[in-house]
Length: 281
Length: 289
Image (cartoon, rainbow over all chains, first blue to last red; front, side, top):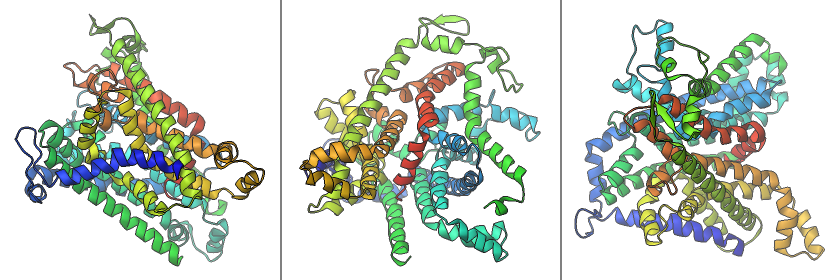
């Protein structure tokens, strides 16, 4: 018990206590510009639903989540399949795949900011060379393009996690099953969908949850690439602006509490599903 | 397996090439840009190698004087070196503290029986899904009250509380895969519980310790949201907060930005190049296996 004491103290003082304060304050009006902290019940939460900025940020976030989960899952599974089929130099290929995940997200975003540069960016140069565009594009002037490009940077960073989780799941699939499927006349595509996919579904569920939660909490990439622009800001950027720029403390807290509830709900959903599959499997 | 891969050996080769291009291409581009003359950075033609390789961006970053567009400006080295020091100190300190606490606590959660053990563990793990901003404002007030804003101790404490759950999860899962017989043998020989943990259990769990240390270090090294709020001045401001400031100034010195980025990438790059085995096993275990 004494060994767990540092954990209880650290987490209690620096996570659970502030969390309780956040939930409590979100029911009050805490605003350094206005006197007093009256109890206002769910006022903030009701206002949040009607807030145009919050709505826009929610849409942006959902777009990021959709793009990130789709691309990370498809790309991650493809990368994992490729990795498990490579025999020579797999160690180095794995290192190359993992690398983007290991780098500071801010530096990633800056590297891509330079790639997306409207005047001198390599994306413009490549697209021109390929004949896709006649002249340089200011990519972030176009909201759909901006959303996709920011999501892409996030995918670049998070795809390795999906790839590694799926790779771990793939390694636990017994090789005899593929032989059996092959003897039964199944081709590679067929055996992927009827042998591989069901057996890695547990790992895939974990990867999906991680993709969803991380994309839902996207901040660094959107902040670096396009600042506080309404077109691309995420819910957490909105929280930062409400709380730390506009100094509406408790309003920002209420929004961050909402983000937390959704993250927890997604995680809980996956934990319950995993437990059910392991109980019956 | 081989029979299923047969459709095309070259298909796999194309796949590997695409994967390498996707993963390393952007990093390669940053490295190339960091060695390119400013005049070559702003040409329309695409060049895959610097036409006139130069070290000037690194000299600007690390030298006693800096220049921009031929004008000598104040050196950024004092800023850069201080931020580098700040990043290193906070990342290392939070790694050591996190791993130490997780190594002891993980053992308690894996082996000892105390009331509320499962609930407590579940609560701590659940905090991984909490966005940092949910606790940021009360935490800020708390640190102001303790006079810990913009101090190494304050930043380290926040990092520890943020990265402890994953390290704890990792260490507990390592202990749970270890046979109890070793510890029981040590107890029979009269070794105490703590002595057994330090001398018998931890050495065997060292791959897990390394994995937890790498994951914690990388998370702390790359942190942006926390220092954006808690490191307002150069006293504790890390590279992740300093480098974007190069961009928001009037002129954007892309060469300098890329050189600084490449230097900030180096520690993670070395970890991945030499200790990827532990990193990957940590990611696999951390994913709930």
